[in-house]
Image 1 (cartoon, rainbow, N blue to C red):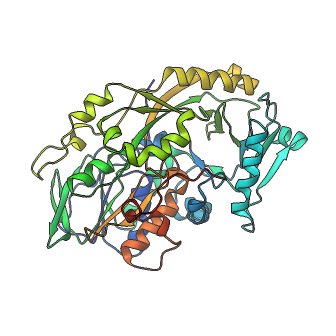
Image 2 (cartoon, rainbow, N blue to C red):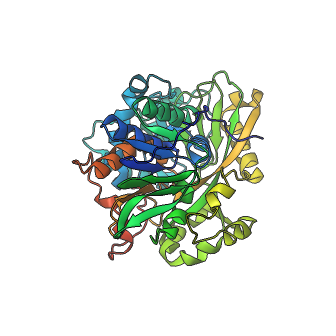
Image 3 (cartoon, helix red, strand yellow):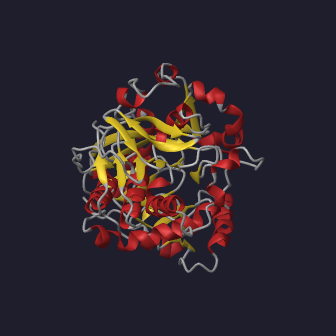
Amino acid sequence: MTAPKPTPVESDLALPKRVDVVVIGGGIIGVSTALELAERGASVLLCEKGQIAAEQSSRNWGWVRLGMRDPREIPLMQEALRVWQTLDERLGRETGYTQSGILFGASGARDAANLQKWMRHVDGLQTGARIVSGGELSDLLQGHKTGLTTALYMPQDGRAEPQWAAPAIAEAARNRGAVIMTQCAVRSLDTREGRVAGVFTERGKVACDRVVLAGGAWSRLFAGNAGVALPQLKVLNTVLRTSPVHDGPGPALWFDDFAIRKRADGGYTIASGHENTVDIVPDSFRLAKQFLPAFAQEWKSLRFRLSKRWMIEARHDRRWLPTDVTPFEQCRILDPEPSQKVLRNAWGRACKGFPALVNSEVVQSWAGMIDVTPDAIPVISGVDELPGLFIGTGFSGHGFGIGPGAGRLIADLVAETTPCVDPTAFRMSRFTDGSKVRPDPGY
């Protein structure tokens, strides 16, 4: 089955000779950053090696959630929710955003206790978060046969359409003066006297004082060529969508068996609630020590495998010149095969949990590569050893919903204005300054 097709965004034709900021990557982080900077009057060039949102930004679940986030992300997600609420009006385009509510189901007494513990992180934030059970849970999940008796309900959470959102933001950024170039890989940085002076693209050189690397799963490879050690791996997530369904659930639901959310077309996006695939690649060994705490915490939900990704990544050049053809040109769109086992399990469990799905069809399935960090929170930071370079990556499966907030924070850092939230937790230097780098358990 074919991968999702984001709304097409046509490329501008002329590559500028000089801009204030170059943004590398046309996912939701990159386009949100470009929009924020363009609205502040900066001249911006966004370069995407393939098409806008063709990778994980169109392949994710479409969730816009505060619920069960790492506490370090909560202030930034609150900012993102504020952006989402008026984003369609601001863009003059539809993103599909709906404040539909999300339920996080408890599979047992231990899970229920963990949901209660997590709620402490949003005390006083007026989120409306509450534990639901009995008749209220049944009313929210009409017709469900999931066996759930308890869930955390986040009424302020919602959903948007991944195939619409980033392209809509990119077009709005262009309307504000940004140049959007697709099929235009940035090969490397141009540096002078130890700081950023521009970029070399496959179409030529562009001078600039600041560069934002928002390359998703490709960010580590690009950073490494610039001499910046970015600890990041990839995790594969498998997703399916259905034909329209009558009498399906309104709020989204996430628990161990499966995750489900309603789509604007009346169908549903469905995925496993806990299974992700990790391809063993050379970087798995290079970064094993840094990722060990994360692997130890999440081992029950990770499926390690040796696949063709090993040879693909082993053959990648790790150093190249601006005149060389790079891995970014050799693979314009990262389009991995979905796991058929995960698809079968998620679909079977979802149909059992919501009998209304039985009469629908699986009309599409796909997989996407999630960019993950050792502590499962992003890098949103300047790079101390290379002034002028800023990184926004490693969103660890949390990037779509938080994207507009992250774009705002990155723009604040680039523009050297007061940041919308404290960026300390997302600093690049946490990997080298002796900090304890590990995921928060979420409660």
